[in-house]
Length: 321
Ligand SMILES: O=c1nc2n(C[C@H](O)[C@H](O)[C@H](O)CO)c3cc(O)ccc3cc-2c(=O)[nH]1
Image 1 (cartoon, rainbow, N blue to C red):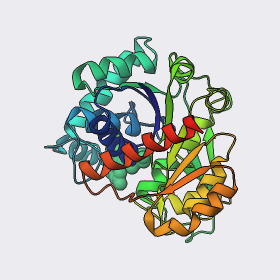
Image 2: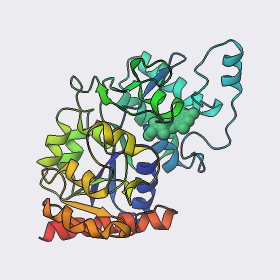
Image 3: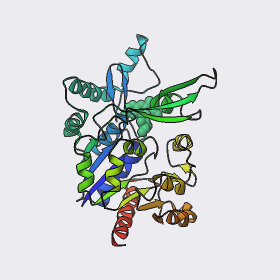
Image 4: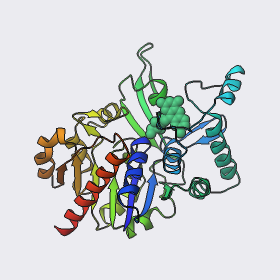
């Protein structure tokens, strides 16, 4: 079975690990969000691609969910001693090596998709990981700073990591998305898929950014195969992260049903909500999306595998309908 997954960072990566356990023989292509990418210290950092690559390749810091295991921060400390920041973004020594190799290859003229493939040669994630686009797309967030009252547009990582989403996101803009093209292999993977899955990743800044690349949303809608998603919202709060902050920016309430409606029946065929949200199944089905309530807390690998298995079961139900 050929499965295409649109993935953000931690939630997407942990779901993928469950999917590999639930369906060990599946041929999985991951279309990774690159809207979180940031240029720091002259290097290109791709947090979501790296989170998927390290998680599936056994190199992730399990507690944090991002960055490398056994990490040290000597380089960051030395840079700080020169007054070179930002200090708020935790790049470790081992992680730096990935960004150096990536930046070197990009400077030599390789596209990000080829660079990602080369990095995956080391990590062997067991999936084909493709960035959504080889073109530069960077998510920015419009905020009003509480101290100065100044309205500013800042990089997503500054909003997420430095400000911890503590101020309202007034707008979320995937800068460059309109002019971007899907990376080689993205549209082909979608066209050849048997099932397309949206993991419990952020619907605005992860899956939403991938869908903002012209051609990807249309290809999924026209693929003619079941498209099934899992709610990242359980009981009106994000399972992890601060998805509610960015949902508000696009006028979507923080609930499992509202996120399904946001994707819409033109895109989604099936939607899984947590058992605590069982009362919303009817509302989702009224929107033309087949819905089931199952446990959606990815507390460990087995729980993630059960979620993935439920998503595949719902996909088969949709196919047979
Ligand atoms: O909360 C944090 N998240 C960090 N993240 C995670 C990242 O900011 C976000 O969780 C994702 O971009 C959202 O998917 C990193 C990811 C990387 O690949 C590399 C470095 C970082 C650094 C931080 C950090 O300092 N603090």
